[in-house]
Amino acid sequence: MSDESFIREVDEELRSDRMKSIWKRFGIYIIGLAVLVVVGTAGVRGYEYWQQTEASRSGDAFLAALNLAREGRQDEALVALRELEKSGYGSYPALARMRAATVLADSGEHEAAIADFSTIGNDRSVPAAIRDIARIRAAYLLVDFGSYDDVAVQVEQLSGAENPMRHSAREALGLSAWKQGDFVQARQWFELIAGDTGVPGGISQRAQLMLDVIAASGQGGQQS
Image (cartoon, rainbow, N blue to C red; front, side):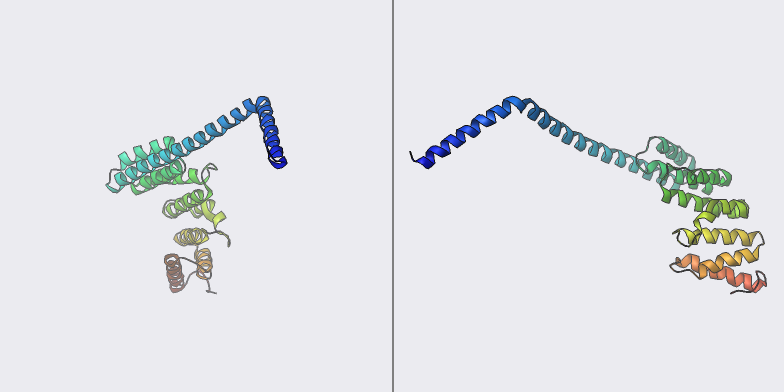
């Protein structure tokens, strides 16, 4: 046996003895760590599966409620949506609340719909984007079933230059002011829309139409 082979065998023996020593001292901890890794991985996979299952179940229930509403079965749709508000997963409870308020509005129950949209708009547990949409929906209903001040309470905070919902908020405020005979205020809101960039086509056209109507009526002062 060469010196090199002898040294290699001794080195391997030493390493083997060292591993045995390490295993005797820390083997139980190594096994425990391995078990934790396996259990943890299984737990994560199980939780992901549960999330997917719950989301799928809530999605199916939401679509079924929408179909009931489209078929004119409003009472049944409301029952299904109210149940989803309680038992739904993820964003589906908030979406169910929004759709339930829409069903109420479509059924002519405007006060109840406004109350529901307003409640959603003030609920901090609801995602901010959905809260803002709820406020906009309440404001449009209040154009016909409330005062300008009621509309302002809902959406004046959304009418700032940097808010992505400003165009709809300004339109609701302008329509409410015009309906109540405040043509100066109405013109100011519609001019803000007309002078802004990135306004959706429908809102831009309606704003210009309202400016033309106000100008033709001789009300609202001089257009800028």
